[in-house]
Amino acid sequence: MKTLVVVSHPKIETSNTQQFLKESLVGLDEVSWYHLDAQKDFDSTVERERIMSANRIVFQFPLYWYSAPASLKRWLDEVWTKQVVYDENGGLLRGKTLGLVVSFSQPERDYQLGGREQFSLSELLTPYRALAAKTGLSLLAPLTISQFAYMSEAAQQALLVRYQQYLTLDHPSRFNERAQWFINQLRTYRDDTTGDLVADQLQDQQDNLERFQQTLAELKRGEAE
Amino acid sequence: MNDTQTWLLTQAKTWEQEATDYRQRAFYHELQAMIKEQAERLELAEGEVDGRTWNHEAW
Image (cartoon, rainbow over all chains, first blue to last red; front, side):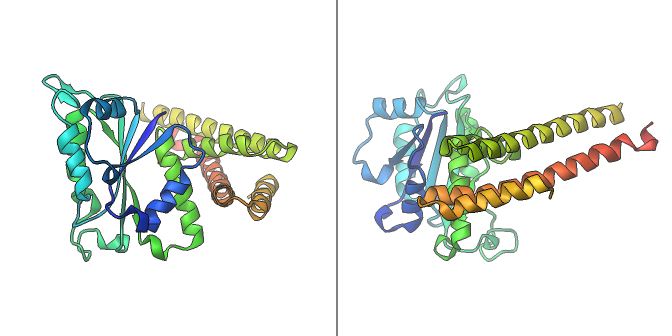
């Protein structure tokens, strides 16, 4: 899967969050990083090709006044036009997915009904749902990054892995896909006997789990009849 | 958690301590979380299959 990470951030060099995310991508050959604020003008042919060659497009930005920074809006206004991303027959980006990686400096609990910010992130990010619907993109649940500066090392490690999975898995929220990802990665990281043994054992357990899940699905179908 | 799963966990932890690359260290750290979650899901799924198979009301 080819993933295009579209980053909107006017001061990226001072953003520890963005630097951390960029570093997380080293070795992921199918992921490309595109920083909008570094572009002067957009060539519509080049931009169209960029969008069309990706299977997943990810908008990555810090929340500025409950929205993306201006560069993302400008790119969308100038590039995501009729005949490029939709036409009279519907969306032209069908079969692709849209992901959102959104960072903010408040605790996550502030963004909910009755929370300090009064609105949930799902409400604030609703325009992207409209955009996805119009263009035929299938929308992934956002990956949110709250208060990166205060994260423990363990939390940052979890974020690194979640981010890599978010960019590369068909359904990053599904445990089975994430488990398979770990097994596959382990096989590329280790070529010793212990590495093989661990990977084989994890695979056996994963196969067992999926067999149980299948049996359960059949049992439930039987109970419903 | 059974003996095999405990061994998997210990192995992942050893690799985490040995890793010099930050990304690999993070990977092995999260691999431990995955091993725990997989073990828990396996136990739950197995228990649920047993429970439903022996549900006399559904016989």
